[in-house]
Each structure stands twice: as C-alpha cells, then as structure tokens.
Length: 408
Image 1 (cartoon, one colour):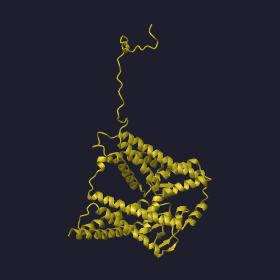
Image 2: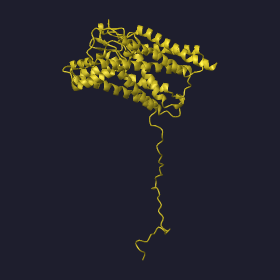
Image 3: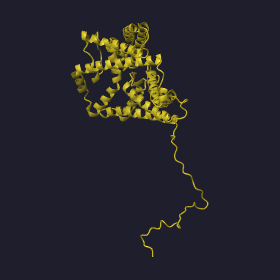
Image 4: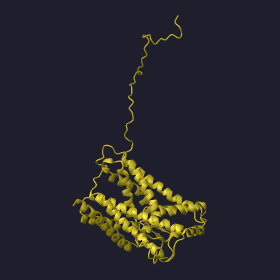
C-alpha cells in the first residue's frame, strides 16, 4: 500500500485537459491599447470648459468670503459680484450698479492662463501619430475657444460686452500664448526652433520686460516698507474681520501684477495716475480721492519728489542694456555699427511692448475722478522707447568696439 506522502507527480498516467464548453468558442482577451480613450480635441474642449467653471468658482468664493464678513447684501448679490469679477479677469468691462469698471485683475488672469496652459499640455500629450497636422498653435486655439464659450454666454446674459473700453483683446492674447506655450512642451521637436534673428529679438524683449518688473517690485516693496504704518492704519480702518481679511488679501493679490507694472512706470519716470487730475511720479506726487485699500498705502507722500527718487530712472537704461546684450549673444561677430543698430532696435521694441503692458493693466474704477487709472500712456511710450532704445544703442556700441579691435 503506497504511503500517503508518496508523490504521484512522477506518474505520467494522469493528465488534466481543459476544453471549452460545447457550443462556445474560446474568446481572445485583448490587452487595452496604450492609446488614450479621448482625443486631444475632446480633452481640450472638456478641459477648457472645466477651467471656466473652476475659475468662476474661485472668483465667486472670493466674493462670498467678503459677503460673509459684511452686514448687508445677500448671497445672490455676492455670487453676482463674483461673476462680474470673473468677467473682469477675462477682460470684459462690467457694470456694478451704474459704475463701469474696466480694470483687469491680472493676478486672476495669470491664474486662469496657467490653468489653460496645463489643459493644453495635457491635450498635446494625446497627440501621437498626427503631430505634423496637430501643432501647438491649433491645440492652444481650440483650448482657449472652448474656455471662452461660457465666458461669452455669461457676458451676453449680463449685457456686459458693450462696455468699452475693455481689455479683452490683451487677455485673449495672453490666454492663447499661455496655451501655445503649454502645448509646445509636449512637442520637443518643435521646441528646437532655429534661433533666428526674430527669435533672439523676442528673447531680448522678454528679458527687458522681466527687468522692468523686477524694478517695479523693488519700488513697491520699498514703498510698503517706508509707509508700513499707513498701510496698517488703512487696514484697521476697514475692520474686515477674519474672513473679510482673507478676501481683502486675495483681492489685493489679484491686482499685484497691475501694481508691479505701475511701479515700473514710476521707475521709468513717467509715473501713473490714480484718477483724473492725479499723478504719481519721481518728480512729484499729486493725489485726489484714493480708495481706502491697504496696498495703496505704499504711495509716496504728496508733494515734490526728492533727488533720491531720480535713481529709479536707471531701471529703463538697465532694461535696454539687457535687451541689447541678449540679442547680441545670438550674433556676437557682427560689426560695431550693426551691434549698435540691433541693440537700439531691441530696446525700442522692448519699450513699445512695455507700453502695451501698461495699457493692458490700466482701466477705470468708476466715474469722474476714478477714470483713467494706471500708467500715463503717452509719456510712458515716449520715455520707454527713448530710454531703452538709447541704452540699447550705447550698449551695442560698447560691446561691438572691443570685438572690432580683436578682429583686427
């Protein structure tokens, strides 16, 4: 008798076979393909609509926070105010009561542009075999178009598209550029663009804008530090409470990019205006009715400026020199006269672009004295183009002469 522990695996008589049931055919199990279930266009449309909903919720949440700290108004009024804030972030002028407001909160706009860039990047990741016909530009335009559909419908419902002057062309251009940038990150072959003269000029202009924004940040931070007591007094006068303080902080952060451009305009010497008849410039400050916002406590004291403020005028010269240096790094072997011409062209173009940024960050906060808030555009255009252009020419000449000596 065999033992119970004896192995029977060695016996070859036992064979197990599995057969399909009668009348049934074996089914092949196919592994899921690596291709995404949604195409890039569907994802771009869904993502654009989702971005519109998410950005509206953020703006409505800010308004609801402020409403929870207020003693009047209703939740419906708060949501309506948040909706108009959302339209403002999209460059659409709105009416709050009978007051027309066209000042774009570029902080919220930058947040929306970032979300759109992320959606465009995810949509571009779904493109595989048809890269030649589905480029970053097309993906960016489709994403932005899907996002703008609910914006347009809400604006029509509220009757706001007729509000002029609006900044929606600049906002849409920012959205499209952000979407193209986001989608181009998934196209490494397209990112390796030959560094032609226009590509180098674009880099120079962007570098000059960053230099001016850094100067504006320095002006703003120093102003806040010098007038910290005034900022604190304005905050205490509002008595916002905890939730109101959060809403006030977020609302001020939404306008920080505007404040940076205005401060950079101050550094250029042309200054900015806080309403009709007012001017804030290194040469002197004249103020009228100013909203009780703590951020505005950084404004200089009314009266003639002192000589220390004149040093801010070097910001424009530095920005022009940076633009020249960046554009010349592409072609370091050109003659000194060509270097001076290219540097001057880069500086003048950078000044014109900065004037465009200043226009986009300006607008109205009401009627009468609260109109034309922002940089003074005509003096700014003259100061920016001449200062940056002249600085670029001199820098190009200074960089080109030593190269001529070495070539000889």
